[in-house]
Length: 134
Image (cartoon, rainbow, N blue to C red; front, side, top):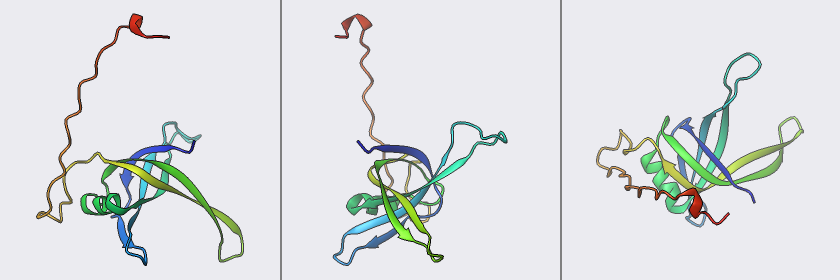
């Protein structure tokens, strides 16, 4: 199974584009803070290149901007290429199957656009440990 989940902030506004056949896609980068300190005592930041397709891409471009906090769930894909010096490299990209907008609200520079509203999540049901089948 190839499943990756990250939470972080967009490093710049998403780039909405279309394929030659008219399918919308958006490229964006998410900065994620590491959970442990490095040898110098600093917490590293990791940068994930992400791509979303179709309606998901349009919504990301519409409601997210640089600094927006998002949760991205998807599949990591790699591709090999040769750089300008002739070295073989591998690039990784997270293809988003799910994106949650954690910042809330629409883009501040687009006031005529509708605001994103979060649906109320149901309260979890408490289960006694004795009711579990294992």
